[in-house]
Length: 441
Image 1 (cartoon, rainbow, N blue to C red):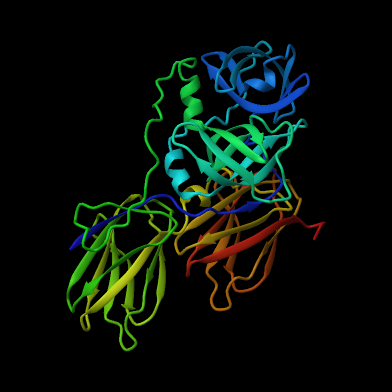
Image 2 (tube, rainbow, N blue to C red):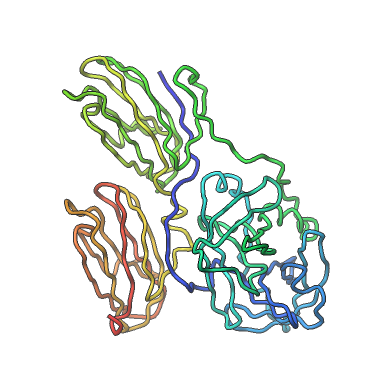
């Protein structure tokens, strides 16, 4: 007996910070006489353009863009669209190319919107730095807009936010156009791509697909060809199992994207079945024994993308079984480009056995940094941390984290970009750490 489970995205890892690195944000701050806003650079061959809300620039004669490198560039309005989008021609000095763009393709947006309820607005300030505002997604439609509100009720969208990008799980999800009674109106990234596709000579995919809906089939409805959509809400499977009987469920695994299985108690006496996870090469990659007599949770982290099989095998009695499957975390959250940290940042997330989470930071030669790892377990340590330099060499290693508050000071030997890499090896739990300078304690 074989069932099919499809896993569709997962759990958000939160990074709490007010300012971040220039990447993954608005490309420039726009000053258009009395109006201010944000936007994205895009090139067409050797030409450079800037996309921003039309109401920010429509009446301006002088338009100035301030990039993350604090460089000022002039621009001129070239064309406007009814959807409140304008394309500006960027006037570059001779020999200079178009600045790097954070433009997104929007291909994952339909799936992301069915799972995630939060995101972040990233706004470029006039000094080149970036401010981020955590937001809650209120509603969205399939073709044009996402409604958002600040997650913190004491925070509001301010003048100059127009054109700020919305990010969901590290993916560009759209551009903030307007605010009405505290509710922000975001033009979806896929719709934005379609709006400017003809100008940039791209045959981009029309966004005419409805959002994916989750259907949880009953045991009677399921057949070998059924696909069951699974999101962050547990999807439950029930049945009967007898001694020596095997029941299989197949699911697609994504590399470094842990899946959580919860096996529920149905007996107060003895366990009566085991479970295995088998990869496409027929190798057993995980085994969970003695199930049925207590509630047990096991997180499995695929080491490569592919089709996996959860196989249940009965060995005592004939009884009911029940388990649920949930996407525990996504590789996009654990190792995404948005995971950039600096002194003062407090980071929280989740880690599972065999999973890796990565956070990049800039190190200055002979300038110590301190990592403070918070206790989250009173039993056994469940992860360790490595620091890796740009040459992919491990320059520091901190073992047995999670069971006590630990501090480790790291002194870069040269200036560069370093990666703090967390490795889960026991259990699935939360983690938390803080990065600070040695002087500030």
